[in-house]
Image 1 (cartoon, rainbow, N blue to C red):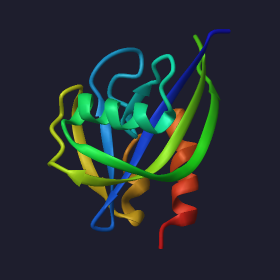
Image 2: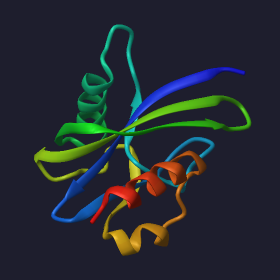
Image 3: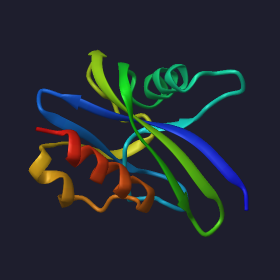
Length: 129
């Protein structure tokens, strides 16, 4: 089975967490933490900053690795490195997603997270105050 390795930004700002709804592909309409594939020779942190700039036109700073999720989708295995991140410049613009929400800890279960992102949400609940 093909393995895809990606990074995801768990952006926390003013006590809320950024969730984005996919606008394309097999997982269209599912909710996720934004991010994407690393390029050859790129560190996970550099990939995260680049991907978020491409998808949301903002600058984030990775704070620490929250969790690494391993998940088998029907067509591929996903390795997703999820970083707690802060929003350091700009307001998110949806360049690839169809919707987005800022969720409080109590609202995290109000969206239909993609299967791999569910594990990241559970890890996030353990660290949020």
